[in-house]
Image (tube, rainbow, N blue to C red; front, top):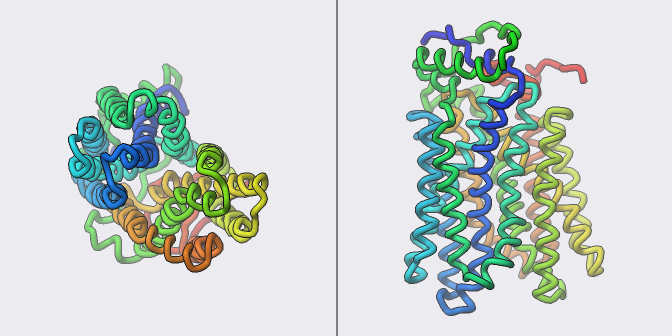
Amino acid sequence: MSTSVNAGSRLDRLPIGPFHRRIMILIGIGMFFDGFDIYIAGTVLGVTLKTGFSTLAQNAAFISATFVGMMLGSFGTGFLGDRYGRRFTYQFNLLLFGIASLAAAFAPNMAFLIACRFVMGVGLGAENVVGYSTMTEFVPARSRGKWLGFTAVCVVTGLPIALLVASVVVPQFGWRAMFVLGGVGALIVWYLRKSLPESPRWLEAVGRTAEAEALMQAIEKEASQGQPLPAPAAATPAPVSPDLATLFAAPLLSRMIVGAVCLITINTLLYGFVTWLPVFFIKQGLSVATSFGYSLLMALGAPIGSAIGALTADRWGRKPTIIGASLISIILGVIYPMISDPFLLPAVGFALTVPIYVLVALLFGIYIPELFPTEVRLRASGIVNTLGRGATIVTPFLVVMLFEARGVAGVMALMIGLLVVQIITVWALGIEPRHRSLEELKGEESPSAIPQEAS
């Protein structure tokens, strides 16, 4: 395969400008509706249950259908994205969950709504994988962490926005309006994103060098704004084989292990602790109204934590930030079950939510897509995301079992154990991508191979 385009080095030397902001806005808005649609479940199921549209068993099936769909979407999008390109894939999945969301708004019964939710889940899981990976391939290495982190902020902002919008819309227009908002928003972004370019890195990786060169020249013209550009670094070594077997051999096997452990951990934290906060609050003696208010306060920790992750990833590095946030989560996780004071409880809960969402930004948005070469990035990310989403299927059963046996302390023990495993895995097997081109990371086999960079 020709390496004459040198797309990676040419993209990395571009100044941040309108081109990058346009990419960020259009991908970020799509990711926002991904987050908004994920969190719709918590805003509508109570209403469908109260009005008799659904039963508790059907609500459970709705949640399960979401996660099964997301798991399949995460897996399938990896193969589609590496085979047909990033542009085709992020447009297809956005269209998929946009149409399914609108169909859900007109569901005649709960069975139809569950089927729509499964299709939505496929699109939602796919968007999460391809959105972050596409941003990874466009943003220069020196500020990649910040831009990817702020993409994660777009996603998690969907949580408090969904809660706030639902508190206004659902009493006035009913639960169906939430699906209309999510679907219409997604379709508007789908139309606007038709102007986004394909990834030049992917075009070059699959041998479409003429298209990659033409696209690079157009991007350079837009990004330079009439000013001379610095010379790109020399072309990098030949890429990793796109054969799927390379994911399960050195150097990528250790990265697959890191990715799987991290995503299982963070998905369990999100769906085994954060989403169960209202239940925990009620069981700790608070009223339903107070529980909702405290949950909204916790939700505000999501964009704050993700923004902290975005701002620290390039400054401190990925590994130190992941390990540091995990340690803080462990300390606060030990303290949280001991709190019963109604004023300290939300304060400590909020403080715990912040480092969890630092990890959300670092793991979902920044670190995992950086671990893998362009040729297999979406497939590898899709597989480890599938494992992470798979954990969400068993998490509710574990949470109920531990909560009934040991209370909140039992649930936190599971979270702390996973965080300890994550710290050890990232420290022992993880690479450090800070300020390094994606191409430079391809052949690195161990943390000891990482060059030390002055602060």
